Structures are given as C-alpha cells and as structure tokens.
Image (cartoon, rainbow, N blue to C red):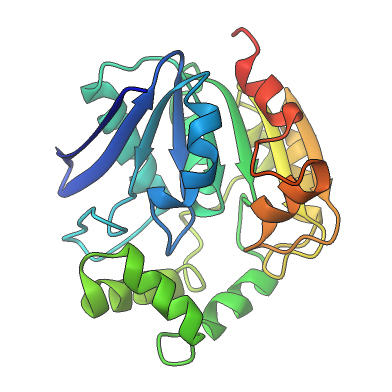
Length: 257
C-alpha cells in the first residue's frame, strides 16, 4: 500500500499530512484535541478503495499554528490550500466533530468540489448546551487518561496542549464561525451522511435533524446509546464487532459522482 507523510507550508502554518492508498481522493478530518491518528483503525479498509489524505489540522498533532487562533472557517481554507497543492480537484470526505464542522465550511465555500461526505457529531451552530460543556473543559480539570492521550498526540507538549484548551474555550464565546442558516446549508450539493449519537452530551439530536432537513442530498443516522466522544466506536458496534466502516457510509462515499 502506497504511503507518504510530510509537512507542507499552508497559509501561516506548517501542516503535517499523510497520504496512503489509491483511488478517488478521500479527505479525513479529525476532531478537536485529536490528530490524524484518530483514523488509524479505519485506514486499512479505506485505503483499499481510496487515496487517503489525512492531515493534522492547524495546531494539532505535528502541525503548527503561529496565530494561536482556531476557526473552522480557517481550517477549511487550509484544507483547500493543501488539496490544491496536491493537485486534487473533486474529492470525498469524512469529518468527526471539528472535522465535520470544517467540512460544512468547505462544502459552502466551494460546493462543486465535494462529491460526497460523512459528518460525524457535527453541528452548524453551538447551542447553549454545547457552550456550557465547552466552558467546563479546562486544562486543570481534564481527566488524567485524557491528558495522557493528548501527550501522545501533540509533539509540542504542554505548551501546545494548553493552547488547544484555550482555542477550544473560544468556541463558547464566538458566534461568527459556526453560524449556518438552513438556507445556507441548502446550497450544499454533496451527497451527505449525517451520523449523530442520541446521547451526545454537547449537541442535542435536534441539531442533526435540522442539518438533514436543510441539505438536498442527505441521509440521517441517529446511533442509539452513543455520546459525542464515543460515536465512532458505538456506530461500529451497532453494525459489526470490528472497526470497519459500516456499509451505509461506504456506499455513500463510493457511489459515482
């Protein structure tokens, strides 16, 4: 299986990314506090069908963020700049949480480029429930096992991790980054699978239902007994004991454009 990993200057950052597999381009965008390593269990399966582009979003993993600011709008611009430098025009995509929110920006910035996408645990705005949960997450009160995981993902150590907590907290206080109206969402042309846990502690089920009702080519899957952070694992457990991506997701991503 073809594999490559490197760092490229994108806008004001040095973005780390991996390429592997062969076929139609499939962009994999991780959640906040995570890195491209989040997709490791799914890579062997997906690389059989797609050319995978797996970046660390700015400030995450092995990517830098000199501005010490993070918006999903800027992350989308970063991803398009990366894809342009890689010579990738149309593509398919999977995003988890912040990755899904970045894809909403990408799908509205350049609607013709995304053929299909799967959005896991995303939102088009932050309701008060999410803002309260975000405010409650601090560097000082984070669980030891969570901090241990972060230490293994982010090469900049404590300074980088503290910066991520600071940027994450800003989501609770801003309204101009994630602020999509149903009318704006309706401009998205990509086939879209929306996956959401019925026990998401940040985002109520009304969020994915509204996104589903706004997109012209969408499928909605509410996963029972699934929260926000364990959505991918719960989704897989509903269908199979392995880490394979369920057929409904693969079908939408593999269908001809």
